[in-house]
Length: 264
Image (cartoon, rainbow, N blue to C red):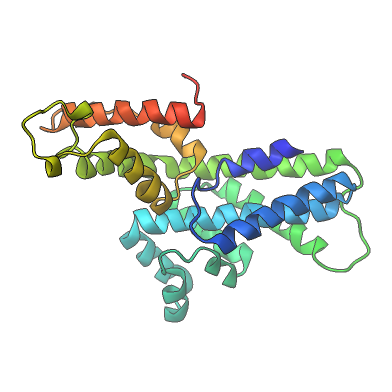
């Protein structure tokens, strides 16, 4: 069952700055695996559900960071409550979304084009989680197969949510490498006559990505898989295209090394 943890973890941000979030997530993973080992499938399901909801909160927070104005307008219509608007609109606050009922908060998924079928399927999983969250002397999962079917549903929904956000992340990434690097990056310092402050080294680029871009935009390993294959054809007419393309190729090369990515 470790593969279910691995597959869901690939949707989570590569870098999480809040140590309490890391500890909580790792605790849920241990709880899931421990309950699998002891055949307590019902409690394993509960742990996996909470782990999945963490991914939901990070997905909503991603949209909040990348489409701030749109998020604020939709959030106000969604809540109609200025206090909740302020609460949910705080940068870096991820698990504050848990202050809202789960079956209500997932309606926010529709603002980045998650389809109704995925949202309704998730509502059914939330209902099942609510049912087993009460002391009703019922065992919903009597064997491994029954649990596995539900876990597959979570991963299918996670994949759909990820696909719904990926074009926004691609657009953001193109803008990022164009604005952040193109004017100052010269591969291998190829311009001998530039001043030291006028260029960024290869190490500077990787440091900027790892310390800022990846954590600030909640980039996951599955995002990296998508970003490494993007097409820059729409940027060919900008003056900085040659340098942007050079930067992109360099970043992809480093990502392939770091994340052991295969050619597709």
